Image 1: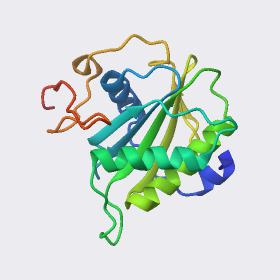
Image 2: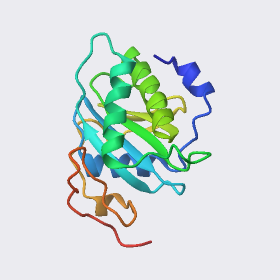
Image 3: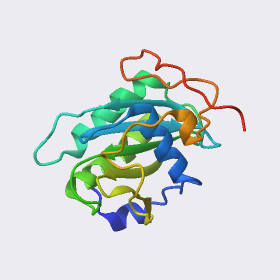
Image 4: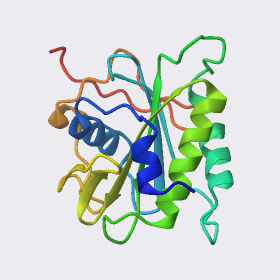
Length: 185
């Protein structure tokens, strides 16, 4: 488990436009409470691949189990980058949960799991974002917003203004999602 101060001190790269990332992932995966969405972004923060899943609930929260679940889903949607000298892609995690926006031990376990899964898959560790009834929050950065939130109706990608690049991300099952693209900017 990582404490918020440890996460903030780890040098996690800031997202240029976290609202766009959150809105795009919410529109694509429509997460409900207890859903994790792991996404891989390229060097320009375009979505390369993503997967959503509902992890087994470990009580207490177990970073090892979360790491293993994240790694399994990353392996299904994107090849590893272990042969590169430095990571060029970044993994971010959006976790939709009940409760308020304050940090919890479960968040600390997810943070540890994300950091370790990124190392084992050759990715740069990116933002950990919670989605609650209060809205979304990038933990460790103090950035957030009220919409979308855990009870938001799903929006269309065209409405969100998100350009997710030329390829449609795949679900954890490996099946392509229905193709929804926005016009090039």
